[in-house]
Image (cartoon, rainbow, N blue to C red; front, top):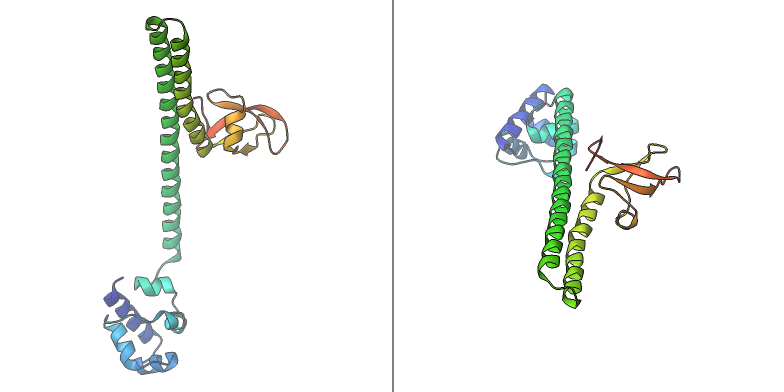
Length: 207
């Protein structure tokens, strides 16, 4: 906060109300020396009297702490920009998570296929081959569970019967039959089962 700017603003508002430092001080129950310190930027109003000071000067706390009058239209524009920036940030984050899920699933599938081919080619059929194949399946399950967790984090699913969008639980996501971009859910609204499409950032995804 710029105390000098705030002090000048307090002085200007006081003068607009035709109040002397002494008169303002008496209204607030403090000394005129305290008012002088504020207006010279040497001190700040105590929080216990800040609301009362704002009422006397007919300003709000945001204006006091900003040291200037704030146009409501300007505030609305700033809030709109902030909301847009937040929305864009969420969309970018969702895209990144979805891309991570895609890479995770593809890399896991490629690893599994290559590893299976290597095992069949170089490991004789028997207990060791079965053990290695079981280990590969276990390794593949780890990224699969993580990809499912990412899937729950991002977006929603759209019921094909009533178009209701909903977010499933992790357990529902894990146990329900699914393809790469849809799952066979029971809609919490209409109660019917259908292949619900995945919706991310308002768009239906393919994979």
